[in-house]
Image 1 (cartoon, chains in turn green, cyan):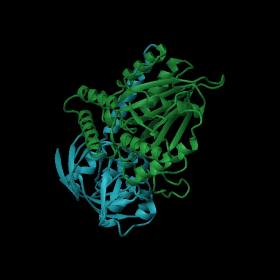
Image 2 (spheres, one colour):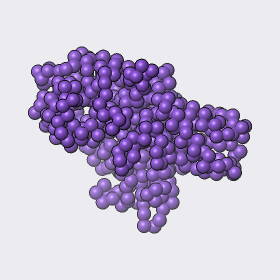
Image 3 (tube, chains in turn purple, brown):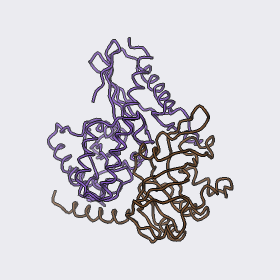
Image 4 (tube, chains in turn red, blue):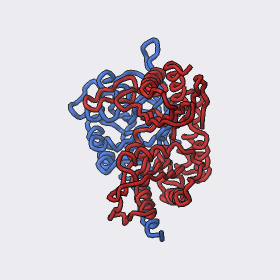
Length: 294
Length: 195
């Protein structure tokens, strides 16, 4: 049965997996980065430490990074499901996960500066809902760290300083600028989730949604696939490297989505995800049986 | 990798240069945004002895309290240091710190402070929370836990072979400036490339 308790238990395990177990495509990209870097370089040492850390976190079922981030989830549900119940269940799961040290108490009252202590707060966790035709509930979760969230940015084209016009060449210029501005501060090598178009809210929302894509997939839109490939190659020519120590591995993946826009606006929104690209997904059928997804 | 014992003396600190790998053993203290502001509001007598000669670690750990009331670090990687740029040089100067551990590097004010006071910026690998928590052997005590919460409290810890890299030294050297300059030159080259 799909009771609230069933949701809470499943979401707790979803959070544990996201916090402690880095997805295999991300691990593979980190390994490829390590093998690319010169043998005695700081870049290589950093990636070796990162990969040791990934193994250790999985073995200990403990957080990969102490900044366990904002839990952001995309929930698809069939007609008739209570989204309020799902929201409550996720809040409870976050509190339990915090008590079990899968998450850090990470919510701070902005006005008083006081930590809520239990991991939950206003808009923490944050859920996106979408009704669909499938008879199951699917939840895709990311844990979005604060360091990388701080280097996310939204550009408004045209941008005179960067000579960036309202076309894909303009997009290329501002994305590379964002990577240069971030240096190592977003915990490079990162993953770029990008949205072209939309408004200031939908742009950030879609840029984060792009982070759900596996690193190895190919964009179905040919011109965006080409842009993703070029940006990945060029971002890695910037020489920023892991942690900003210098090196060939600055970015692990680039994922670009597009939304329509108003005639007056042309936003390019970039969400930077740290190397600890934590995501996990689960599908629950009508009986409450869970299938763990990639 | 050179092994250094905390507390550090000025001579040792001034001899180290950007690019050196170091393993730290001894007592250090954590402190981040709220702590830095608080340390400068007035002289904090009770905490001062735990800062003198050692390093402050920009870290907001995940901490578990054990049945006997003691604490254990569950995850403990560095946080972004640049937010402490307005305070860092003054905190080093006032409390006699010999270094800072964090990630992402710091700016010119801190770099000048490192030179003046004889201190280092030590970079830990961001996100490596398990590897670094393993190097934390004991939590000695904590200041301001109730007021600041777990991530922002000042935790006095014993570490063993805590791995860091010198990325800003007491001679004015900064790896972060070098990398930034290089990446900006590459950026200009890429922008000049045909569309």
